[in-house]
Length: 107
Length: 107
DNA sequence: ACCCAATACTACGACAGATGAAGTAAAATC
DNA sequence: GATTTTACTTCATCTGTCGTAGTATTGGGT
Image (cartoon, rainbow over all chains, first blue to last red; front, side, top):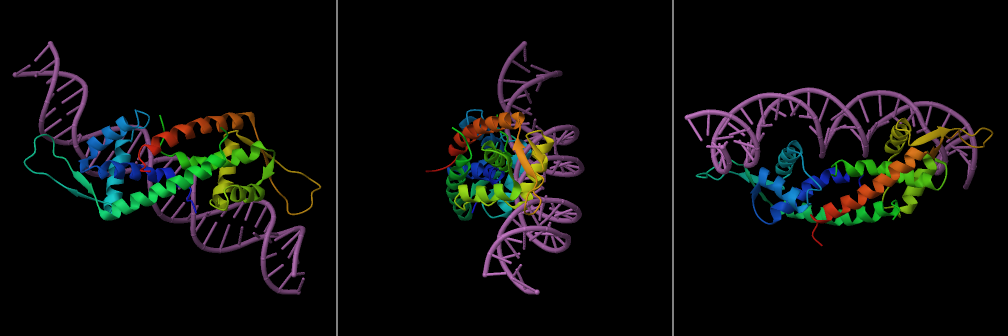
């Protein structure tokens, strides 16, 4: 059964997708989402950072710092096993969502 | 540019789709959405009726009553020209949304 | 050396849409 | 005549998004 609050939660999925390829941090993820979507989707900063908080609370990602690094201090994130599992569920849910919504869309 | 609050708003689109085929009322629309989605999506009553209020406020639908009808009093709705236009926009937006989200989905 | 843009966040408050819980009431069915 | 189905309504709460604003460091251009 599909919940109607789906896409909102897909910001989380996009972030997790970015982290599948390796650890990263807010600004970089934001740039990459923008680039991957070919500028069609730009995640707002506040949305992004509040997603981080939520995902870490849920155990989907974990944060850490690298010391001895140049530039402004970054908070890095990596995806956890729970995060991967959650991502996989979301992928399945998305297929279903598409099927359902498409029944209500004309061409 | 895609807004991230998309699917929430697709409840409205589903309702409008149902009304494209002719006037209807809450309970019937609800049943039909359930049926069309093959039980995969059931719109909550409160979601449905609050969507009606919103859609009427936006001028997408208009409500009326039929008198001399048997059964419990129903509020009927029909789609307006604005409603049709809004529906068409949503269809286009949905194509884009799918494209974008699919870039972040594995298989 | 100075300025401005880019980087990298954080804090706070507001809002909209979805939902849960509960209630009302008429009609149909058994 | 009791229960189920139909057909809503009201109200309060929650969650995720987003606007506004602020902080602070770094890099690039002139």
